[in-house]
Every structure is written in C-alpha cells, then in structure tokens.
Image 1 (spheres, rainbow, N blue to C red):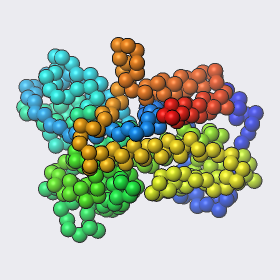
Image 2 (cartoon, rainbow, N blue to C red):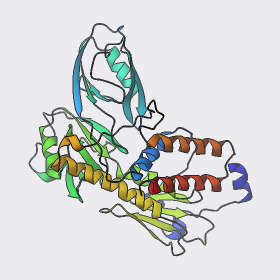
Image 3 (tube, rainbow, N blue to C red):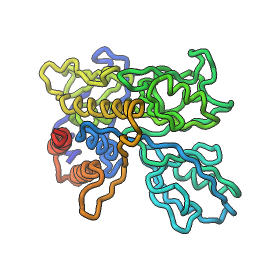
Image 4 (cartoon, rainbow, N blue to C red):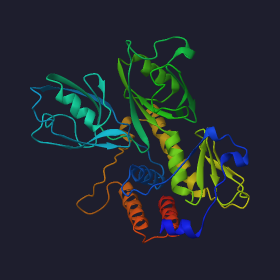
Length: 382
C-alpha cells in the first residue's frame, strides 16, 4: 500500500537549501511502522495524562538493598525488560535471591555495587561477576509518563560542591513551577548524558525538585552515584509532532524547539513549528491556510505541563499522602475495569499500526484514527 501510494503520487521534497536553510543544522526523519514499539507506550501514557484533569503523580523513591550472592551459579531470579531506556523488573522469581526483598514488578534497577546499569544484559553481566555482598540501587515504583532516570557516577566525593556557579556540572532554573535544566558544563559528568537544556528535573537522588535551589543542594549532598529523574522535553515535543502531524509532511528539526514541515513540490511554503520555552505551547509560521491543526497538540501539551507542575507543587506544599500513585502497569482488575487508562490507548495504537502494516488501513484512515484517539482522550476529561 505504501509503495503504491509513493509510485502513483510522487512527492518531491526540496532540500533545506532550497528555502534558505543550513542543511547541516537539520536532521531528516523517517518513520517505520513497528507495532508494539516504545513510542506507543510513550504516546499512550501521554494520552492517559491528557484524559485526566486535576490529577497529580507520585514520584518514585530511591531505595537500596543488600543481598548475598554465594557463587556465580546462584539464581538471580529477575526477569528484566528495557522500557524507554530504563531497566524495568517484569517478574521476580520465588526461588531467586531477590524473592524476599523489596524489589518487585515495576521497579527500575539503577546501579549495582557502584556500577551504573546500562540495560538488562548489563545487570546479568554484573551479577555474574559478583560473589559476596551485593548492593542494589533501585526505584520503588515506575517513572511518571515521559520521565526516566539518568544515573551518573562522579569521580570525586560528590556533585555540585563547587561554589562557582559557572563551574558546576549542571545548573537549574525554575520556570512556572518546574525546575528546568538551564545549562550543562561542557566537560562535566552530564555532558554526554541524554539530558538536554530545557528538560525538566523532577528529582535528584530521590529528593523531589521543588525548586532549583533544592535540586542544586540535593546534587551537592549526593555521593559517588546519583540518579536524576528527568522529563525529556525534546522527546516529548518529537512524540507530539509524530503523533499529531500528518505523515505526509517531512520533518526537519532545527534545534530542539523548532521543526519545519515540508510537503509537495519546490513551490510549497514550509510550515515552521516553534515551541515556547515557558508555556511549552506550539505555534506555526507559514500556516496561513491552517492546514496544520495544532489544537489537540496544545491541549495535550498544556495538560502534561500542568500535571507535572501541580505534582511538584504538591510535594512542596501538601502532605505526601495526597500525592496519587503513578503506574505503567498494563493490568486489569478482576472486574475487568482498567487499572491504567493508558493500556486502552496503547492497545488501540498497536492495532492501528498492525492494520496499517497489513494494508487494512490507508494512510489517510491511519492518520484519522490517531487523531480520533487524541480527541477521545481530550474529551474524556470534560
């Protein structure tokens, strides 16, 4: 179906130089349909957030356990999977060494004996080489939608102990109630991490980042390894553009906050999407005929930003008991009621992908189905 569409409706996309842009500052994007991909998990969780108003989420705490590994033949007993870059516990064996520990389904393994975890295979490799006492750093619950732990190891006694602000590894600022990454030292420990300027810092070493001062102090008090819970604004924007904007447009990202949409021949006028630093909302230049509809995108963006802002405010001013739990669990209660609404959207997204891949849906119907999901999520909250 895709090949036929391309052959009967050839589309010439002009290079960036044709409309006065520097090609070196742009990156093209190709989308490949893969049912059950991680992107569906991210989008389904964001749609779940968009369908809830006046809600807050609970931030995962950092916990530690010590166990004894008698020899390299002992059963670890953990079933792990990689979820959006995180090493998540899928199942704990009753006969393994973690059977009677606090590690349970949904926990994220962050470090083992001072070594940062880089995926399920690294956990098994590290555990195989250890005999004797094992120290595990993990989160006690899944990360909020769109957020992930960035774990870094410092060579000294701790982070952020320098008094000169310009020499710190990372600097924060507070914008509209959220702690934002303001700057990252070029040669600091976070320079090669997935963290980008503009990302939201939710916690540092398990301490909720209720202000930039709290985040800086928590970083200064941390020891050799520190987990930072970060909401990636770059990934969030790209997920929203991929989900909402019609596939007929080619995307060219300039920086992390500007995306140019191209479609048609050389005479077409590119539409430029620009995301506001403070409100996160998107506006379009060159969209005089309103071909690119941003209503659903901005509603979802605003609700996600509000959810994070109100959640951090709850940690700063309200009892922790009022903070509602957040879970990525895709389980169903005995009555058949969904415990997590994101599962409904996730299954719908997977079904759309499968139907598109099998030729049961045209490109037009596929895009219409995705827009309908966004509309349902938004209207459900009313």
